[in-house]
Length: 336
Image (cartoon, rainbow, N blue to C red; front, side):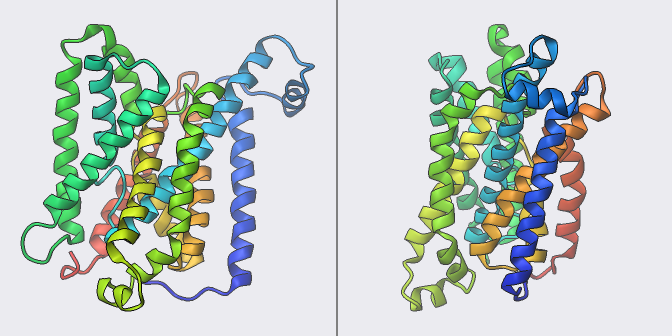
């Protein structure tokens, strides 16, 4: 990964642009759907003076929009941190199998341990995400050259495929949970409520704090372990704190939305074009752009399949898969 220095004024201008785009996406998410809503009705609903069907539509879309913004920000920051920790441009919660690890933990918890509360889902998802991340990194580190980008991507892809099979094996004999798990497994924000948002918020805040506080450490890790250690950084601790923040963000988001891929891959690469490689700027940029991307993907999913909807994970997969191929092709073979 390479980058160039960006002037501070240039970065602040792009921050403002990202905020405006995010606000526009949020407005579109509330106004657009199987039934469009007038902006004046939105103002009336927020003021409590609107009743009837449109009031119900707006009451459902507002928490859905908030969940899309927060989930997109969490996945994008998680991806940026994973890329920084592993120094791997292909790192992403989906590609490394972390999303599927969180999903399997939730499905196993529902099927065999009777988990019913959203908070229990979140703890299970974080545990599954952490174990999967450690497993993939260990497998990708075997052999000559250590954890190269290609080896990590292959280990993550193989692990994801295996975990999907395990999830299917758990669901098949359990008709009582199969339908709900299958719909959640696709990945979407349509079921977002204020209650689910409130339950996941403490975990996301913790994850964001850990990741953002690790920005300077990630800058040092980018120089190499030996250089970072020579500058006084405790490399193992720095990696552990940043990785913990990324796993919490990914696991908590997956528990609420289901597995959503490619946001953590696409957004950090795009943001580096305007923010440079300094993580003190890259992480805030990624949060804003990730929220805007997932919200926009949710809106497109409603428009493309009217009057039905495409789940947001399907839309991000269509956009992210070609980008993943592009990233792989542009890497030098010796770097892979």
